[in-house]
Image (cartoon, rainbow, N blue to C red; front, side):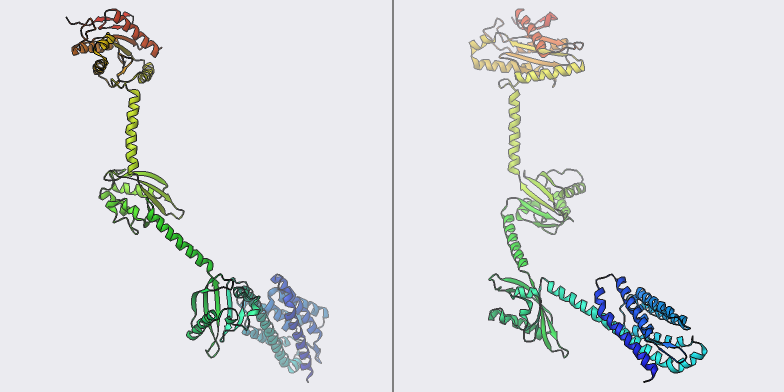
Amino acid sequence: MHPVWSGLLANLAVVTIFVSSWAYLQAMFDRWSPWVRALALGTLFGIGAVVAMLSAFMLDEGVFIDLRTTLISSAGLFGGPVAGLTAALIAAGYRLYMGGAGAWGGCLGIAVAVGLSLALYAAVRGRKLRRRDVLVLALLIAAMGIIIVFVLPSQQRDAALAQTAVPSAVLHFISSLLAGLALLYDERRRIAVRENQTYRTIIESLPDSLNVKDRDGRFIAANPATAALMHAKSAAELIGKTDADFYAPPVASRFRQDELDVMARGVMTSIEQKLPNLDSNPKWLSTLKVPLFDESGAAAGIITLNRDVTERRNLERALEQSQQQLSYALAQMADGVAMFDRNGIMVFCNDQYRDNFPLTRDVRVPGNHVRDILRTSAQRGEQTVLEVDDLEEWVNLTEAALYTPTEHDVPLVGGRWVQFRTSASPDGASMVVVSDITKIKTAETNLRALTNLLQQQAVTDGLTGLLNRRAFDEALESELARSARDKSWISLLLMDIDRFKAFNDHYGHQEGDACLRAVSAEFKRVLKRSSDVAARYGGEEFVAILPDTDEDGAFAIADEFLKGLRALGMAHAGSEKGIVTASIGIACYRPDEDWRGAVELVGRADQALYGAKLAGRDRLTGWRGARDKTALSFG
């Protein structure tokens, strides 16, 4: 063999050794960061370039030829800048260390090789390397081998061209192509291995049962979930067996027929089936069956994916039962229930809800908007009172209240009342509960009337209809406080029927009660203002509070009463007057009197009344004899 070919083939062996070494060693660096892996690749191929230079052969003219550029360019293409520059620096350093006339030319070749590889690396970055990329690099390196010869001295160039140019270019091309393809296929092999491992890990980790059967129904692949489903010890135990080895003949026969139907139709099929589990607890499976075909298009097997949907089926059954129970409860409950979505559309209502609104029952159905229902209700006069005069404003307010937790009572035509209770859900919907509270409202009205009556009776004298003593005391305290604040007059009339005991003894208590009612009616008649207060003070004693009334006004009212009482002409055989008469005592507080007390004012009026009785009765007297007027008498 020609010595040139022998030397270059030796270099090719060096390239092969280091490329193979990287294929063996690179798995050690997979767990490291990418730049550490690239540094390892560059270091290994840099050392390989040094070994290639050590294996170089020398021409007669002293020219050394080797395949260092194959390893350097491969490092740059497959490892990037870190790997390429590392390999180039190691090779260039050694070449400079060797020295000689061609040292700088050798370094130039190294630099050109790494530059070409990094340029190609940058051009293909972002996608996977392809065989044509390796071919391009091999051609560039082969061309560079010839071009480098032209930088030799003229005496050496002719010999190099004659003896080494063509063999060097061919072997540089072959070595670069083989090295690149080896690295490319090894990279693809490693990617495929990783992907297969990933797929296997995913398949084995799947919670769903995944298995593959051949055309005869025998398992050829299965994951652990399939083994668990079929109560096998492991997935490996399933291989080569059929469903008949695990299920009863009818079940296995049904499963096999399903597989044959799918393979016959040749299309993917999804079914849901009940599986009689081996532990007597049936399971429900959602099964996807995909037919497999060989290169000729014939059925070769089937892929089956089973998902356990037992829990979902149980939940669906429980939900269905709950819905049935809820529907029954809604149908039996007394209250009406309606649901509106976030846009105001009714989505549900029970019959009781619609029955509460007979005038709009036809529009209170799912699908209608709450605004349309409200307008119809107003137009048909279903509600006796609207909160506002403007219809659209009322519709807006009512719709807004629908989505606010609230409770309000609404009067309907015909004297009926309903209560609305609204509550909003987190998703913006609203639930309305409507109760017929007509009976409650009627009871409330009756109770309110009874309460008012009891309150009135609590402050009213049952015989005369005037205020009783307790109510009088409260009214007097209030009016005294007001008059003190306002610096105003306040007067008090204390009236007593003359010789009333003798009237009762002579005519009896029934006539006595009639006399009291007549006297109290006349006493109340002369009090013209709503602010005047008349009360029964004792048995036959009556009192009147006259706010903002001075002495003259009080005397005028008292005098009018006495005249009116005489005019009644009620016979009184036990009185020297012959008719029913009365005596009145008058007491006042002037505006300039700061101290005002109820006990004191009543005491003054009582003293004045006592004076009127001493003066002969049938008259009125002011406190301390401020004025003394004797009423006209009959006869």
